[in-house]
Image (cartoon, rainbow, N blue to C red; front, side, top):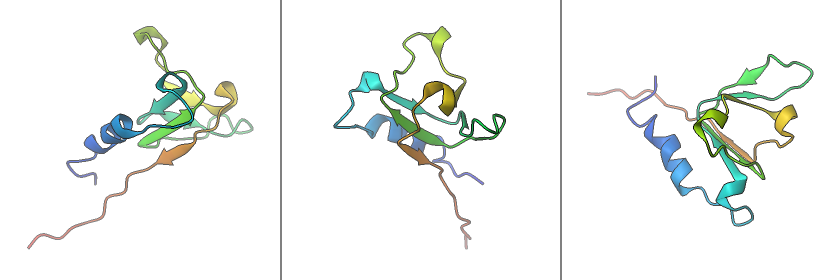
Length: 92
């Protein structure tokens, strides 16, 4: 089960990620959206908590927001993918 920081952590990654090689207008960050990764199996996807694709222009208008990220359409594989894991904690 996610803990209270599950929604905070992807936002922290978004706010602090900075590539020295790519400006912000060439950095797409996806948070909890479908990531379609295999063109031979187009229905296969993962839904990572956070990922970044460098060299990809983010949407600038609400109507252009991506509902998913399809690697064979974007032609850029994400540079980094993060899945947040939460361990169980016993409370005494």
